[in-house]
Amino acid sequence: MDPENVEPILSRLSSVLDSGLTINEIKTIQSKIDKMKNQEIKEIGKYNVIYHGQKSVIRIEAEMSIEDNEREVYVYMYSNHELVKFIDNEMTKFADEKGM
Figure 1 (cartoon, rainbow, N blue to C red):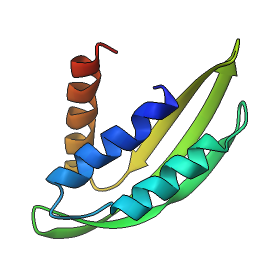
Figure 2 (spheres, rainbow, N blue to C red; figure 1 turned 30 degrees about the horizontal axis):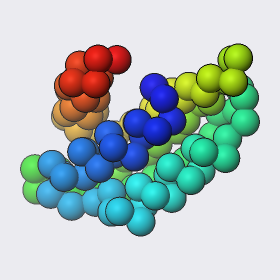
Figure 3 (tube, rainbow, N blue to C red; figure 1 turned 45 degrees about the horizontal axis):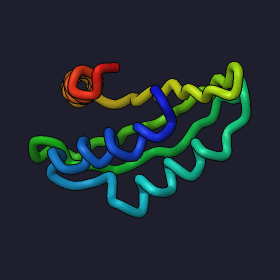
């Protein structure tokens, strides 16, 4: 995805979680991704969230690819099965809405 889509998708996820992924955390994640170099893979962090009343942790990793001055970031989110399934659905909806 384009790096500028990271903050909007994380904000979308945050809005449907019971709690977690605060605005400050999202801005920190975006800042870390913005500083990444070509072919860099980075552990962005672990974030405590509550989803459907259950405490969970989302671990975020990112990989940057830059070709012809076009930046593309692959964002990987790891958590429990139910939460990962939810994240995948939300990311798919987001991509469809944006025509990605």
